[in-house]
Length: 195
Image (tube, rainbow, N blue to C red; front, side):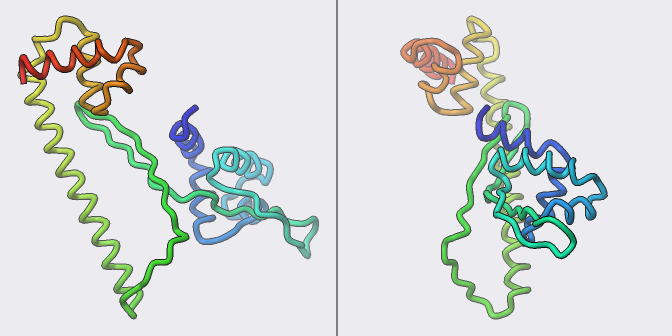
């Protein structure tokens, strides 16, 4: 299972996502999470185990409780962006790790205004990304229109479109199980003859 597969597997469950939402603001322990989510402590422990196994949360240790046994404390382990893009001619999932340990200087004394500004900038970047995806799709439609009848086999089509999504002949070679020189030859022939 790849790192992305592990993350998707861990995040597919709504309860695990709710646990993560509570841990983004600080540490938590199973009984507290059980009360907040209104599910059994045993179920919470199973979900925490899966999240921990996939490096999303971590067990930090125990603390004393006035109400009974020591509490097991959990916190977030990893910080990342998971980007899923799905469109005609395009499907991609990327995990981008985020290092929050860098020292970043905050320039504005008004933290609320600075936060709003950053949120707006993030939204602008997301909208620009959507516009670029639309452009990419239009280009891919045009390429497909030009060459759709030119492939000698469905394998050639698979090789060519895998190459366009990775730009890496060696990766395509490994994925499809053909020698790199054959993959390169197919890609070059299609580009030189038709595009």
